[in-house]
Length: 454
Image (cartoon, rainbow, N blue to C red; front, top):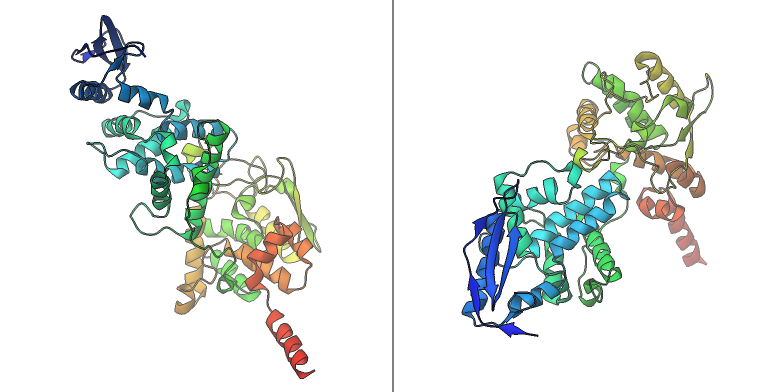
């Protein structure tokens, strides 16, 4: 490598030929002048500072690149973790659902601010997370105007982020794991949250290996035990049919129009075990509602809710295929006469939207999760005792689905049929609802007693 110690560095100057503000750093190595343009003055000042520190340390400058040996090594180290995270999000955007995009970003809000050098001028963590959430991880067409504080935060991250290859060092990957184990307020995160964030980090590292940016997945080289997640439904959340009937009746009396419009939606979550996003996407053409006997719901689409910055449409609800199924797959759910009657009454009173959707506000908008959760909590207050209100009993609308599946299993419906109706795999079904299947303990105890007496 041809080097020189003859280095001259000039002051930063504003690029007058650029329409958007930019700043030019000029320096000379031997007889050859060099220049580099930066979007912000802070980035330019950081670059000049690195050059001057190298000259004070007596480093040789490469004549080919114009950079000192320390900066040449840094340039050869590949992308920073922040750069890789941005390219990872861009590559995954098209193929991911809105909720998945939100989950990936939430993990990176913990990881990116943790995997940085100890440089002066670190912005507040909230400013770092805000610029990641509202700008850096969004596609160009979805980004808004950067506020001054966020510009400074972005500039600092671009300079301070660790090289991706540094994650091969145990100390760096442990820093990443420590970060995902905590909430933003410093308290321990829930077990399921930690596991979701680690899954994102693991997939990122596997992608880096596949792209030959890392020689191996650094997570495989460290010992780290994730917190245990229950993975099963708490039987204390499960309501019985009488309690469901009382709750549905109470929903009718919450608000002028909101509660009455939600009764049939909650009924679908219980009598048909629909997920909230499946109920949100339910249309009249999906429902066979005979005057007598059992009916049939044929599910085609779901409308999960997410922050609108992550959806394709910019709305809070995106239309998606059914969970755990192929894009155009459907699921048939036979529904009992009680639900048939509820749906027929709902359609008669409230009609349907132009696209056939059953459940929406008086203005035709889908119900937000906060809206139907608030109605549900008010119904619980109208029906339950003080002790029940503070208990996990039907604490969330989603617990209606858990109650439905538990009822079917305890009624003796074959697990294969329950799994088909609920949209589960049989193995997942039995694992998740293991604690909600009643009557087995007495049967097993009887078998043991019989064996002991033999």
